Length: 603
Image: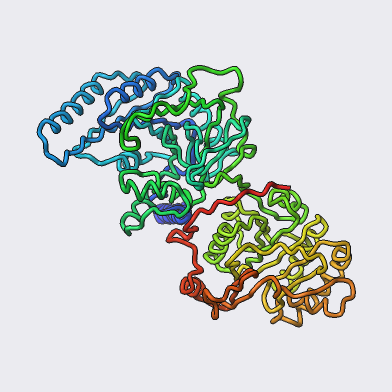
């Protein structure tokens, strides 16, 4: 007797449904981590799919265009396929409607098109895009490229550039090193510029002074004279640009020389838009520095949109390998130096997870012996970013953030701010309520600062130093200064302070905290020091005016004393700060100005 066969089809359908549901669930989970329009792109770069396309932007300049294309054709591509796309903008209609002028422009475009049709490109596909009307330089740049995958890279070349025969070999080596090598990859890098870094964008265009040994470096400024673009950041920019254009948001960034360009030239140029985007995202560009004004890409600065008359080449073009340095040597990304728009060196990735990591991070903070520890617990992200704007405005550089929001801390560290992740700081020493844990973490952090020889400012993230950075307290007679009604204190490093701030003192603080939930950390210390005979205790009122946000106005400042505004328990904090002009963030939740100060050297 045969056993009854189980129906196969229902089981097969069930299996198919489960598989489909699993795939759908995975896809939805993955896609949610990316902008919707980007989630369909190739998610994992694959060097075997590497594709390089050259985009030449041309307009009404036949002789410079010939020089540019001939330099591209003599470059060394090996056996690689490299496509060439030439975007020719249409001539502008003259305001006078003079027929002879119009005919000259028609003839000029025809001559350029005739040359382009006859130009031979042996390294890949050649495409010619001729606009039916004049679009201008901004549209030419922005509309030139939409990446077909995360393995397609675009090298944008304006028609008055001349390229080194070695430019492609260099760029390909850099792409393989800094995009495909996971140990050197950083999503904050948006591309590679072959232009020499020439001026400080945040200092009215001051000339950059560079160390000759830094052959490669990272600088936030985009380089339009030979800029290679990475696919993902460029897609982000295109979407950001569309959004801001639709909302009629202008790319104004106070303190930047490019804002002056935009006010003068308006929508004829594109760089202020990209710079505003880079500032909002905290991205960086790889630059070359070969010394003696040498470069792999040279702008002849022919008369056009950017120059009223011919200005001549900006650099000396490298035509062959040099003997004074190794052109194709790529240092690990971690060994390169990073600079912001002020050309101030920044140090991305400074995250303290353990107490023994604190010393190395503090060495990169500043060169004096006072550090400001900013507690971000209970502080909204937008308020944190607004506080950073005040630090930049007032020149406060010697700070470290303490928090428990790992995503926010990673983003701050990526942008160059030193951070401490409190949840991982101590091992087997924390128990009890969250507030008690925080007391213990702060206590041991302060002890470590003292051991390393630092004075400490401790401030809550829910306050703003309005008029200045926190003062340098030169009066040596006080060891501890505070306002115990808010989270603001100064502790001087001394032999007495180090002796007093021991394990027993920290344990007692944590014990007191269990029964004093309404008292903040600084209040606990003040109470603990009431009967001590070892430390000289005082108040901050002589140096700082502390003003509640609810009562603050512009008359709250006092001559000779720094003003700090504080608040607690306000849910619409952003709105209240805006009311009294204490809000420095723009629509991208980034600072609305770039303020450059002299850089303090690390200790």
